[in-house]
Image (cartoon, rainbow, N blue to C red; front, side):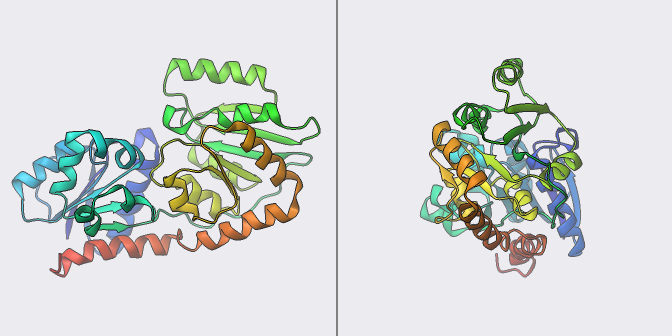
Length: 319
């Protein structure tokens, strides 16, 4: 099939949407499809459109539906889509009505949709290849936060948590990710001056992110809104347990019974869990054991298979 894959962000942004689009294009090409990845549909003929982000890609979604109303249209919901836009934005809502299939990135995603929309929804977990461990830094319990400084990510929660760690803690938190506004950059610089256990490394290449993950002890994801963070997949691929805010997007990735949740916005509880992970070998082993189980859902062969199955529903004429 000729597939038009639409992503609202191009290669230069190096964000989650772009990485997902690049992986999916590869998986579909390996299955024999012809894939063109674009930020906006150029109007050229395609047998199927696969669009990431209902609101941001709506112009392409609408144009394809108007020109080829009977051809399959697949819409993938990201975090801001799933937990904000589809509840308040008319373009995002219309995109869901036009879609023949909706894709969500974790198992709690369909909970946000009514029965009619949930019936045409499929779950495709994102993935990462195995990341080999490298030697850890001596005399340091290295914790990472990964992602651009955005309000939805609650990016300074781990920084605030470091103020509540005991003096003898060896925890050092590093945030990898660029600021998307001057205010965020100024806040990060101020936090770095006042919180000696927290370092802002700024925007770094993806290969540097993976290298740092390979030696880290822990990842913190403190988002208030998340559709299914790919960085969780990468952490599990590197055998790095996660401490995560207790919200649907993270629960859908890590499971209901995962022992590493803290209440959204609660830096004191996060500090308690960071200290416990650093000092309680049994707790850390439990985190790692749960993470290894969830890792099985997020391997590249699983992601490729699930995605190809969604496309195959229409390739076989059963959609």
